[in-house]
Amino acid sequence: MKMKLTALLIIIFLTGFGVISTDSNYPIDGYETTGIKRLLYLQKKIDGEVTGTPPIAGARKSIADIQLNLLGEKGDSLEVLPSADPALQKAVNSIFPNMDESYSIAVLDITPGKPIRYAKRQETKGFQPGSVGKLAVLLALFDQLAKIEPYSFEKRREILRNTQVTAGTWSIIDEHTVPFYEPETETYFTRIVKEGDVFSLYEWTDHMLSVSNNAAASIVWREVMLMNVFGKEYPVSDERAAEYFKTTKKSALSALAISLVNEPLRELGITTDEWRLGTFFTRGASAIVPGQGGSIGSPVGLMKFLIAVERGLAIDRGSSLEIKRMMYMTDRRIRYAAAEVLKPAAVYFKSGSLYSCVPEEGFECKKYHGNKQNYMNSVAMIEHPDGTNYMVVLMSNVLKKNSSGDHYGLATQVDRLVRK
Image (cartoon, rainbow, N blue to C red; front, side, top):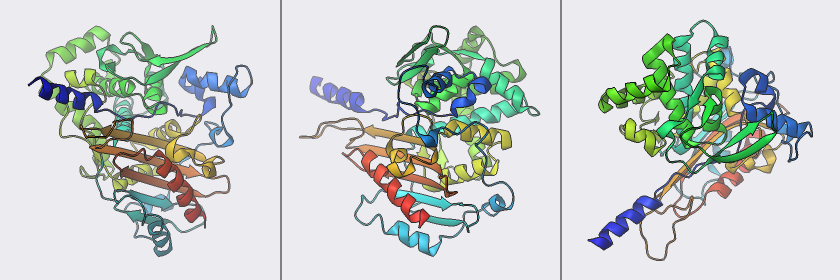
């Protein structure tokens, strides 16, 4: 009995999320707009006021430079995904014959002045989305902000900027760090989130995306629920929020949480089989609000999301533009986004992974090397200085191998074939 229990504990211990914690998003000059202090630190790097490697050229777009690329007739033509372009489809097919069968992809070329081109491979195949699912939380956040302040995006921004949010037990457990910066003392450091940490709602949202922090994702999702429950009374005190979660049945909390993050996806025409989110990102949050039905994502579902953002339909035009800004990479690039060929380009990106292991003789479980499941997913919008503009969703489940290098290599190949 003791040996069986030990084996079970090993399985539980080795099951984990492979989450990114080193890339950063949002235009660097957005500090005055958002109050995200990390951005001020990056600006001081550029200005030489603090030491450190400044961001590359493709990461220096101004907040005013980021625009939506599928407004008007061009976007209207993408209400339904187009048929595959024969030449692009042939090129995409040519890069996968010697790779793991799980690789699935959707590519959409929207370069101005050229016909829209689409190519795909197993685009409806379902994967555990991992941290890519945080984009659904982001969409739900802007959905609730629009309900509270339907006529003023600036008032929605004020809620994000001015609402101070305490982490609480929802942050337990997350080993990934977030940045702390105090401009007055020039103090900068990173560490894991603690229960007493307080950030603005904008900063928690930034942590959720820029360093893919699980605690931040659960905290933002919690605030989405509180917005829905309290409406114009939001934000509410920590005590009032705690009382709501304590006195409401777990089944009701679960139903509400799942509805709030999934219904905005359905409004975009993304089906439950194409993308759904079913559980919180931390054990502390899941103990309060149980999950339902698990999570799934597919290249086609995530491509529909990217198109909706560029069309200004992710809630509304203001929300879509802010979502795109929050996906803009401004610091170290990793995985798909790290390809050398993308250095000059603006990259709007989210990656996610989830791996788990079971005992296997001769096998050592390591991060991103799961032998039970080993998902790695990349979602990217690429804007080159020469006008080349395209979107990619790449998903895989290659067991016992860190697929980061493959994603990096595929980014180079996809960029080359789109630009041919």
